[in-house]
Length: 150
Image 1 (cartoon, rainbow, N blue to C red):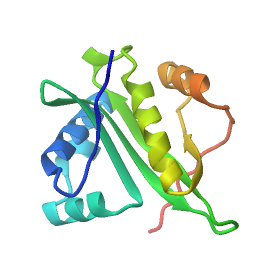
Image 2: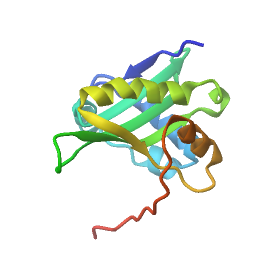
Image 3: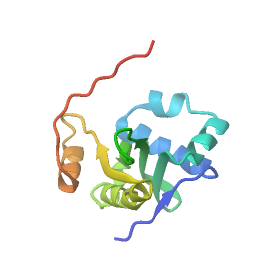
Image 4: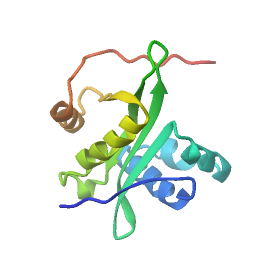
């Protein structure tokens, strides 16, 4: 199956709404992805920022898979890493290679950004994500900590 993937730009605000909907449904998190969406100016600026990458795949005009990533410029060498922050596929479209295709589409974007690696985390118990990422890369078991700034 051939999967078409779009990299969203500042003019793709409607598509970004679809991306947020896919994440809300996949992660069962309306609070984070539907209730307090950024305004038009914020989203336009974010999509224009080369340090933010949003990819979407559509079927019949509707977003069915999406990826959001950030380019992290390193300080110890002149290189970057790309962090996949969110990746989701609509339940009705899973097991069709969409997630893998999104990651494959990210690779040339990461290379162009000077990235040496793409990295992602998967929560314990998220067996489908762990299986996907294990098939694409090297697993490292680490602990993740959220440190509040307030």
